[in-house]
Amino acid sequence: MTQAGSSSEVEVEELLRQLAPQVLGALYRRYGQFEACEDAVQEAVVDAAMRWPEQGLPDNPRGWLRTVASRRLADQWRSDQARRTREVTVAVMARADEAVAAPADDLPYQPDDTLILLFMCCHPALSPPSQVALTLRAVGGLTTAQIAAAFMVPESTMVQRISRAKQRIRATGTRFVMPPPAERRERLRVVLHVLYLIFNEGYTATSGPDLQRRELTREAIRLAREVRRLLPDDGEVAGLLALMLLTDARRDARSRPDGTLVPIAAQDRRLWHAESIREGIDLVTRSLRDGPVESYQIQAAIAALHAEAPTADDTDWPQIVALYELLEKLDPNPMVTLNRAVAAAMAKGPEVGLAMLDGLDDRIANHRLDAVRAHLLEMAGDRAGARACYVRAAQRTTSLPERRYLEGRAARLSEEG
Image 1 (cartoon, rainbow, N blue to C red):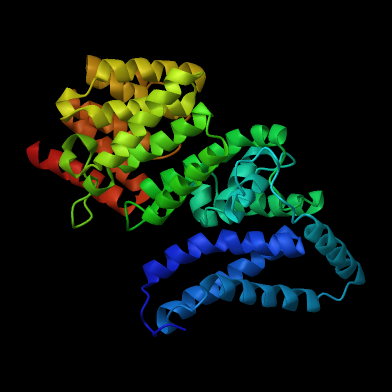
Image 2: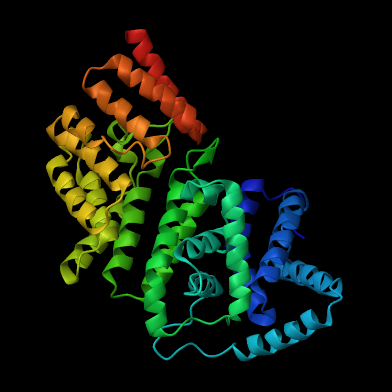
């Protein structure tokens, strides 16, 4: 072990988030039985999270986790008295050993275990919601509560969904290899959606004291780069990576030293990361030029317009409205409508945006609709209405920085009124 106390809890958490899917991939390749391997890895991660901040990192953290998880797995199997389970385990182990093969001929490189695990969790035998939920749990390292918040469902529902997904993976006897090209293409849409959700949870945490969780945004960007290495000519993969880079470029300007949230219009744009913006704009420009236009490319183009504006007043809102209209045709959903309403309000006046919010109350079950309505009512001069919506939004959010910001807006309107 390294010197005790040499690693902070934050550093340990970030390291464990990177290592856990790699160890899970190694165990699943060797032993099969995804559900048992995932449980064993989680137990090892919990053990490490308790020990490493106090005792320091082991010389080989990945090897430590794999050893502890393997022991947990062995203990679990020794406690199982059913001969049938042991026989199935031996059979699955044999198949898993046979599955350790050279990369497919069509791959430009050997993908790492995390990327293989990402595609495996998006198995066609699972329903799309289960694919996303299982990948967020096994690869993204999100808690069940965080995943439930992302899907806007009760945590108990998400527990059942993830459990069924693990059982289904076990029943299919899925091998730990990258799927063939045709099947890989089918799974790509779910893979990209998963990375999008992981990034969003990192960029604006759904709960807790921190606005951002940098370890999640970094991991989502890393995995997006890996997928792009695998599929360098796919425009939507490039679009998602561009969207992440352009959005993440604003991270240092989004909050003050005390953690107070700073909306984009008030951010110090000198703090935006120029290199990420340059890379993101280049990616989205080339992807729009070279192929068909899809959802993530349009979102990246919107982010690029924000990034290119020297000041908030210079933002090309009419062009952003046009892009949201196109996005709504390609991918109609209430959050796109909500964002289009904001853009329309900025381009044509708050009354236009407010009219577009009609009918969304039954379709958006979180605080964002109240927050947007409050902002547009404030723009329109309805201070009382805006204050009521800010208060309601603050009560509904589980993010402490967002709650403080919304409460602050409501308090300011009270003082001015």
